[in-house]
Length: 425
Image 1: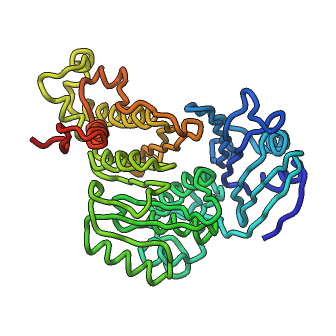
Image 2 (image 1 turned 60 degrees about the vertical axis):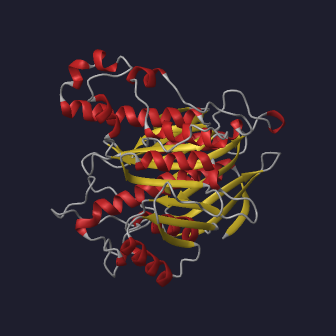
Image 3 (image 1 turned 135 degrees about the horizontal axis):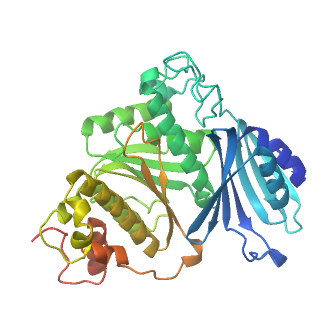
């Protein structure tokens, strides 16, 4: 690891060629105050388009996110303008190293560089040609370097080559780590505090191990991760692997989402492919704990579809969308989208900045939407709306399990005699 002062131009020139992802944060204005119109945070991600490699910039202003795609030259020019003068902090992940940039009150920059193996060329596809028109893809967990848990879980062979049948899983793991990389600044702990994470419905724990590998092994951050699942054999297998690798701070427990109580409220809650209302239970727990980050990939959103299939309801949706609802497959897909939008609205009402993003290409799985929620620091100490009612909710005329769970929590908090588990008599 090296640490030395640099100029915005020198950092921009060294970062751009190998940049995989980055976050620019801590906006500054006169006297160190946030400047008017300056995004609170800018996320950068390398993407591959029809014309080759480009960079996607996502600017966050309050609850809004604005995206644009730029080329290498424009990115370098932007970084020269932003580093030090407009922002006092940045973190970049490159092919082979991570770079942390800090600015003092005078705008002078210090770059902290740390070696980190991150990228290898992708293998040929089934036809022998490079996927992506011979473009090199940089992955956070690279191919060509054996990673023990990926070998044991059947994703890699002993030489670090990705098993062809598992390549979609390999891409999924790395895509999820890109989302984790984006929120690291929101999780960076204070001195003496470790990052606490709960993974609900961890299953075989491909992603649980990957998150540990990225945060603890590659980034060197203090973390405590708990994987929770109902299956006893799965938990036993994952526990043995964690012990085998010497992954201190990573543990697995058998149990359900609703009955789980951690030692301390987690900083981040992960819920991937929790079926139907299990996603709502995970989101409700995260909201009760006021977790700083929530990452959820919903699955099998049947609840609203079943409710809208009834002959009567309180909202106008059945009349207005009758032409669409009469086709079962259309009603099912609309219900899934409406469900995730309502979940996002409820999270926003509780003080989170929320995005619904594509997790992985639709050709690999139809369950490809990820809800990313980051608790807004500017709302700390306030009391956001607890019911999260909206025009869409009134239009649908139905309440989701998430809404009923939060209402139950409020009743229990205030000692209501009417408090009972939703759906029970």
